[in-house]
Length: 146
Image (cartoon, rainbow, N blue to C red):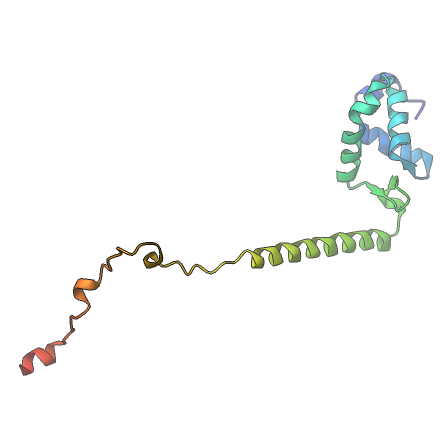
């Protein structure tokens, strides 16, 4: 890692440099310590840490090569058993299922029956079917009998 020239490192993304650091380091590291190493390697100003740490965390979170361990440190996913990775995926799916269930329950709570009747608001209401309410419908056979 120290063998890489600054010019070469500047051409790499932060997540690729992080991968390189973790690969050579052989053990996990916190987000802050990892990002500090990258800033030092690229000879960036200290202000970069405060300005970009959140973006760096998001980048690691979305890159499938990395895994965030229970102790809050980052490591390479390929160093951990698939059981651990499967457990994390199962927990995420369970959280998603719970969130979906909560949304469905909220939607059920929002169902309101619409029993609105225009006659309730207006005493002068005129039923549009008032004129035809006494009409009787006859079929052709009844007409022929008359």
